[in-house]
Image 1 (cartoon, rainbow, N blue to C red):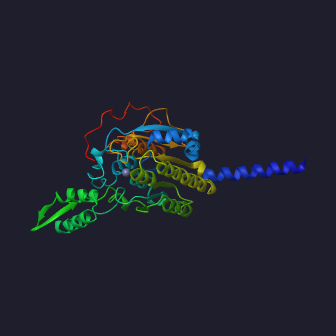
Image 2: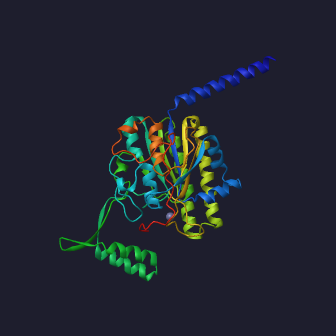
Image 3: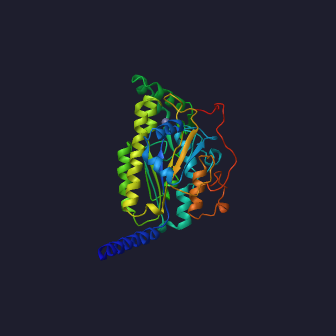
Length: 358
Ligand SMILES: [Zn+2]
């Protein structure tokens, strides 16, 4: 009997330590990006119990449908909307080939740095993709260089590359007697200055995942806003098609890495105070190898404050800023996104394919 009482005391003490620890760590947010995950495909996999981590996370909070109803269904437009809360008209990032740097101060990273002060939050981005979630400076490419690259791409019979470079070459302008092609800075060129870590182009999921775990360890005492981007469903979809086994496997891999990140948060004793959101930039054209019109995505989260409604890509930024205590009414220009704890007007994806450039 005394042994049992002793054990109970020990357990109570452990529980208390656990609680104090959780209460000590400030509210943090982790975005886990599943690039190019088609909603219908994910729903089928959930029904077959093939995405246990997304299922468990959503069971703690919710899984909402998100319909893209403005901006292209591609990577640049998608992540820009998700990480700013603005429509393309505000950021100038319309699609993968029509973009500019997000204006300074407009990203969630920068708003949180400003709200808490740089010493009081760690804003981090660990990203699989390179250019479409890029931070490169604007440049001026001499037309002569571009023509050499076109010739080399033609030798390799790389049609896609040839077309892309030819479209670029068509934009040449004359400057001081030389023909140059002005290339705009990538979306995160300005924001990167305020972000504590913006590492992109890491490639495969295991590289991104390992780096993310390292950063979680390094910042275990810090308030966090952490964007972790997994690229593999998008790549598998482009290579093998949306209905391929490879696409399914890539989604399973995203789910497995999501599990490892959550395990790490638990091991660090901070899962109770961390909101985790699985977020998606665009879906995939049904049965195809592209996503020219793929507006059906989702958000899955352990956040319990969502009202039951359909969402927009821009909503998640507004929601996270609100959860961190930022006064949304004071944000200028006003956000297009609406926090998920509020009702919002229906913003379903248009039925007809828009005539946006690909
Ligand atoms: Zn893609």
